[in-house]
Amino acid sequence: MAAADVSRVEIGFDGGLIVVTKIAAKEWAGLEETLKSGKGVATFSGDESSTYHVDVSKISYVKHEAHVGRVGF
Figure: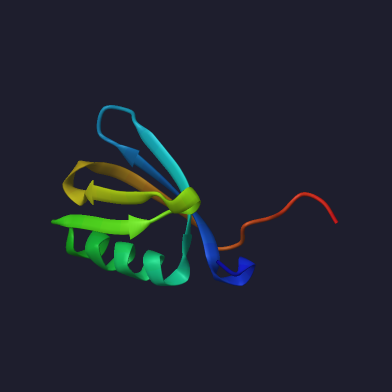
């Protein structure tokens, strides 16, 4: 993933579980569309070749950071 196309997403679920991952802009668009519908299962690929299948009815909050900073030079 190119650095400009990557965003950080934090998803909080009912019961307290939190998932944090970096996703491509295309993946975020699909996730956001499913979140807006308020029902169904969102499927997206995260960092480290992870695939997530998330029941959006179980989500308490989503934090999306479009700018992912890097440490270093």
